[in-house]
Length: 217
Image 1 (cartoon, rainbow, N blue to C red):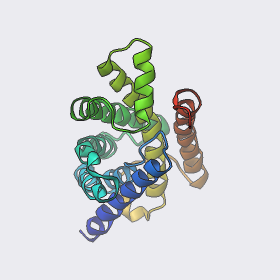
Image 2 (cartoon, rainbow, N blue to C red):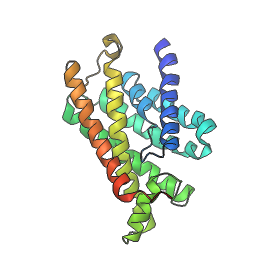
Image 3 (cartoon, one colour):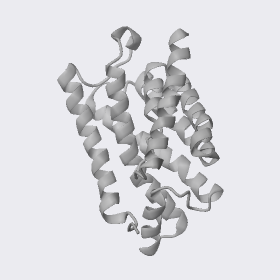
């Protein structure tokens, strides 16, 4: 229980700081689920969900109340990561962990898209709005454009979150990870995997910045 008391607030704080920095720097990602990933893997899906929900509610003090409805997306991501790793063993190698992270991205996007569409009318002021606008200009309807833009940016974001989270978890003492199968054996194996995952996320974010971001000024 001491680990839960320490890790859940720390994970939530990590999410809040990440989300604040992403907004401050106008990054085309969210950075609000790194702590969720860590808590879900180390403590289990429901404690990960608690950390995710806490970060959205607590983060409203810094990022505004618009993030509160997206607690549902954060919870969904925690459940997929947590059950995927701890019940279904999808952390057993690099390929299954990569696939699990993609599933997290898709699930979070599908949960977030209706919130964007029906609570905020299709636009939240985030970088994803630019992707939505480009897709609408290309002929897609608003609903499909919102879903597609959320999928694109969530894949980039969850690759970053999932592999930074993996690096953090791998740095923890082994006795905290009893029974948890994770990819990467040894320092360099983990490092190579984390760098590869981050490279994919950064590449997708770069596509947005180069081709879809609105002009400055």
